[in-house]
Amino acid sequence: MWDKIVGLYLAAILAGFALSRVPTSALVTPQIKTILVLVGGIVIIVFAIAIIHLAIKALFHKHS
Image (cartoon, helix red, strand yellow):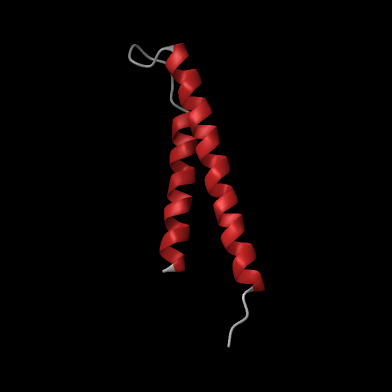
């Protein structure tokens, strides 16, 4: 179960990078690109923190 969650979080981080690297075109204006870069950066930060949280929890979790 834990591996699926981490995989999902990594996919979300990759999606954040994809959002932040969208090129400007006729459909994506500079204003929209600014919003996408902001959203992508927030997604990257949030899910990176979530992965770090899971790793710290696993580090200190005692196995019986």
